[in-house]
Image (cartoon, rainbow, N blue to C red; front, side, top):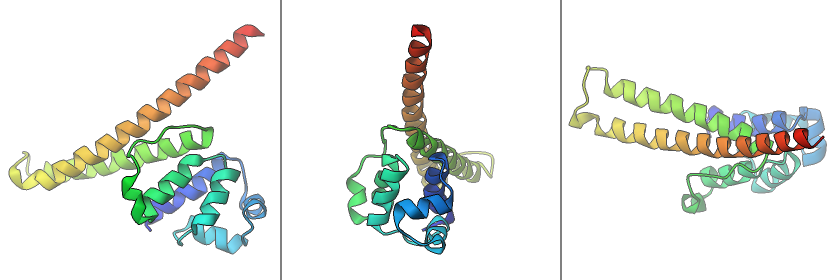
Length: 157
C-alpha cells in the first residue's frame, strides 16, 4: 500500500480527535502497531472495523475493502458522506485524485497537443477527475445538509 493511502487511517483518527495513545485503547493495539498502520503496514480487516466504529468513519471501511480486497471491485466509485470523519476523507480523496488528474493531463500536454498516443493519459485524467467529482459532490451534499441543520437550529433558539 502506498504512503498516500496509509494516511487515510491517520486522517480519520485525527478528525475524530484522538491521539495515538487514545486510539490504541479503543482499538486494542500497541502504539507501535498503530504507527505502522498509519505509515503503510497492512491493516487487518478487524482493526479497520474497530477504526471505522471508533472514529465514526464508515467510509474508511468501504475504502479499505475497495482497495485491499479482491471483492472491492464490486463496490461503487462514489461513496456517500455520512459523518464528519467521512467528510475529512472525501476532502483528502478529492485532493489526491485532482493531483493525479493534473499529473496525467500535464504529461499528455508535454508536447503541446493531445494525440492518439496520449489516450492512456487522457483515460487516466478522466478516471481521476470522475473520482474527484464524486468525492466533492458527496462532501458538498453532506456539508450542505449539516449547514441547513445548524441554521435551522440557530433560528429556533
